[in-house]
Length: 404
Ligand code: CTP
Image 1: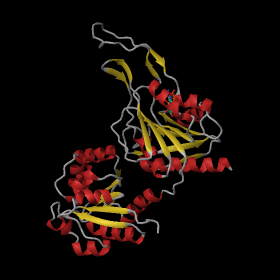
Image 2: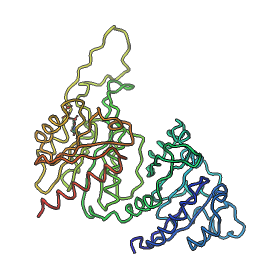
Image 3: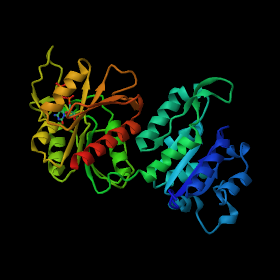
Image 4: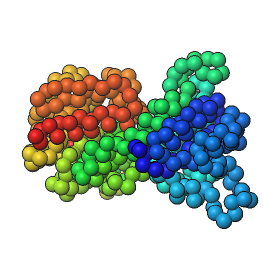
């Protein structure tokens, strides 16, 4: 059985898609997962406790203070029991509560105590889904390290068409199942990932930075760890968190610190993926006091930072695989190929800022992966977590075929 008795807590909230969660319970059970359900009161307007308990073969948990369960603090024992929590459907309400740490019922309280990964499948009216506060809350959940299972567009229960329909249960099952199965293709591999921007200080209050959020690198680190790798994530300043125990995180601020951190661990790695947006130039000196605006102009003298990717490219052994990133605004492929070869990488992942929905500060990306022998693999525009898996799958394929 692929689920291997892993424990799923399914949180159901009050949306019409709650009826589809019954199928989700069946899918988990059929594949060997143990399922316990917590449903909000509104969810029980759509589905009945009898259906849930019959399908999950477990008692439904709805009340934070249940007089029949006095021996156990249910939300804590359930959070301890869970290998993961899946909230499907997730209404705007539970997303908002979880994003802001509000715990006023069984599910919201349990979520704050959850230890493992949390998957959230939003389902709501398209205007509600597009509403800036809801989008902001979803972004906060992403930053917490939650897996957001994007809703689909199509016919909505309110009679309109738009984006907000909960992803189909089969697909939600696949995503969670893949998390646990993950093929473990990277088991026993050591993977270093760089992520985020760097901040180069001008004076004690100012710096030169860039728009990188770190999401692409964090997604790669998460996906590699899910597939069994021992991951070292060297990251510049971001708001992101990772929840996977297989990730060792090293926080840095400047390009020089990132260089040092990478050099310390590079030797022990099998795969190195350099997705950080490292500053190419840094102020030659940092003013010790805040620079005052006494003059009409200010000259900053910048010097080149050391190129981490190129340095590792020069030093790496034949058994190490190096992936660079290229962010281009023009002559994309030509420039990316030049980077691939001059920096001696084994593969380069090209992002174009010209592609809508790709690049900085978007949850999605579209990339062109180019190998050392100039084979190209183009992805669709999709969630960065999915792009991360595409990159790792290709790296796995290239490292296993090259090794033969
Ligand atoms: N990179 C790095 N160290 C640096 C600068 C860049 O490791 N000091 C890495 C990035 O992490 C990325 C790749 O180099 O994997 C490409 O970075 P990019 O800034 O696009 O390329 P540059 O070589 O700096 O070229 P240019 O800025 O001229 O496009």
